[in-house]
Image 1 (cartoon, rainbow, N blue to C red):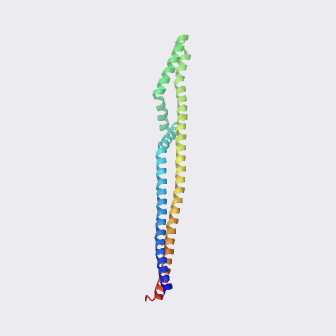
Image 2 (cartoon, rainbow, N blue to C red):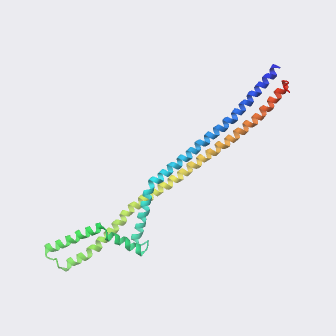
Image 3 (tube, rainbow, N blue to C red):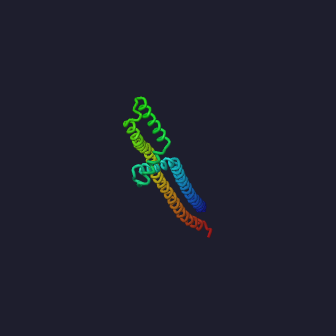
Length: 209
């Protein structure tokens, strides 16, 4: 009789243990899934932050590239004319042109050739030559900004790919955790059924029925 009672108690303990195991398996899986979800959210937050930081540089580079294309005439004759006219009408061009022409006239006055053909020719050639120089300089300056924007865009793209890889890994871990929890709970349920049968058999043997 004592042996049968012990069997009942043992089967009851096993049943209790299988229930606890099933709950623990579910909680563990939920905790792992939550951790993966938090990791996904953090990856997205970090990527959005990087995009925000690099966005001004990407925007500047895009605009700079468009201006370079206009200078080269790739944006059409109208845009090319507007780009060159903008340089010619700029305060910098006007200031340098005025200083250069004054220097030519002062030199001519000092040498007595103020009204000579050489002076008039130098004046006629000065502004076109200066404009050509400043157009090339402007194109080179824009090139630096374009390169900066290109690098920033590449960094954003690389960060996006890395973030996608990390998120995919975290989602995979989340799926594995959830699947493991389901399997663990199923195993615990099967164990519980076996324990119930064992408990029933032990109770029957003890004369409970």
